[in-house]
Image (cartoon, rainbow, N blue to C red; front, side, top):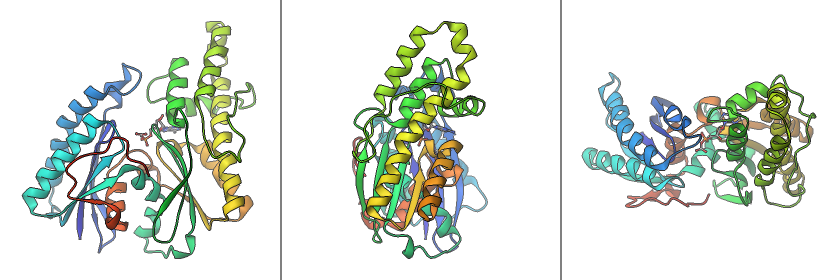
Length: 335
Ligand code: KG4
């Protein structure tokens, strides 16, 4: 079975095909809009919709024009959560393609795509995964911060989410205050490598046992600190500021993972979403897993940020959870 997947929930237009028999992904095309939104310091929804309208037909053309093109058996599309004007473009394109090829259309929850993505390497290598459940997952992206469990039937249960900003959003906004370009995670990580994570103390909201995340106080705390500093002082201490800010985010995330692991005794831990590309956070998650003697399933780097392969994979793993023949999108869909 060939599943064609389309992703357009935020600022990445993406197309991918998964072949269920040969267990491989093909035609993995992504067009990022980061450069377009950078000048505004964040994603501008109307521009995102316009960019998807330009990019998706081009990506679909590349897939159809390739030598290995095979008509799909299923078209899967992200139906939410995400920006309404961005999701709508992907859904329209997917409907047209499903109609053209006379195949079923499946609406996929973007968060399930991220949540299941740590399993991709196991599936590609045809490794058994039944002994990895119950699984505890941490999904950290620009729009979401979720701690959840997944049982052997792939049912997800959210344990904690953010009450305000997502961790990635706090990174992007913090980076902006420091004069770094959007998206802020990568340049902040780069600077943090040469900084001292103990140089500044930023607040960690909620103790680990409280099943909520919050990152807006952290952001405000950086703002107030920067207001008290001279411009040249900020420049001189930028690496320390980045390292300390990332450390506060990392502590808030990982301590809750640690607590939930002790309480719930999962058999594996997963880490996914755009922010999971951060090496310092990966090392912190590795430390939790090695302390608890549990396998850590890290989403491979190419599948951390928004991409269509994870949507194809979610459609393959749990097509029955998908919405058959979706006629509308759901900007506020939950995991
Ligand atoms: O999952 P994702 O691509 O998109 C959405 O949430 O839609 O995640 C994007 C987020 C941004 O906040 C970006 O700054 C962050 O992932 N990010 C990183 C890194 N790479 C991307 N954060 C920390 N370290 C990184 N290396």
